[in-house]
Image 1: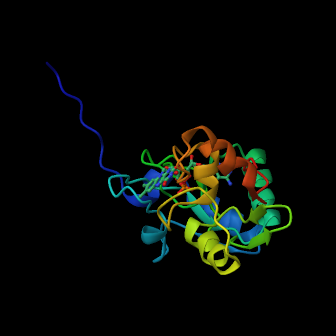
Image 2: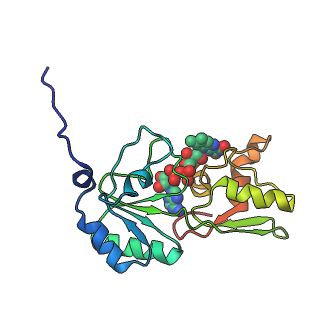
Image 3: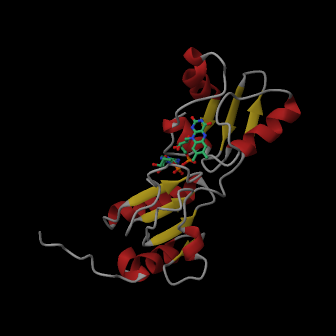
Length: 186
Ligand SMILES: Cc1cc2nc3c(=O)[nH]c(=O)nc-3n(C[C@H](O)[C@H](O)[C@H](O)COP(=O)(O)OP(=O)(O)OC[C@H]3O[C@@H](n4cnc5c(N)ncnc54)[C@H](O)[C@@H]3O)c2cc1C
């Protein structure tokens, strides 16, 4: 049976045109990493170390306005986009070859409203960011059990929570957590 071979590409080739990162950097007021940047190789990694993908650019968004600007630019230029929160998705769906990776890690604010029983979080928050102030307030959010799992990814599609009553786990997690991300559901 004939076999096919995959051509070996270097990082910039796999990521696509270097022009993407350069053009994005020119219109954004945040850090944009290109495949030739020293920090790029570490920044493209996700929790599953088997995932080895090369985005065209990695944008360290600091606000919803940054995210909006990336989405507008990529839509206008027909460039695919992925979003990374905690990077824990096993299949590595937050990073793709040739796409622009929106890194929300710096959007990590947490605001509790104990009267309303809600917490509003930035799109890059991890559960440790929520659990630490929650403990100080004497409240708990029944959600991820690992501190470095992303709130956004878990809320959008995570599997389980820590409430002993499985019938309320998902609804409790989703109704008591609100992300301020323009793309994540509350
Ligand atoms: C070590 C470990 C522990 C875990 N523990 C738990 C647990 O206790 N309970 C549980 O329910 N699950 C748990 N999970 C599963 C986890 O909740 C899911 O894998 C979840 O998708 C991870 O979210 P993330 O933000 O870390 O991952 P990411 O890979 O960053 O995101 C997951 C998906 O959501 C998308 N996404 C992220 N942010 C946004 C956004 N703002 N807008 C739109 N899309 C977005 C990403 O593109 C990706 O497709 C665990 C996973 C691991 C690896």
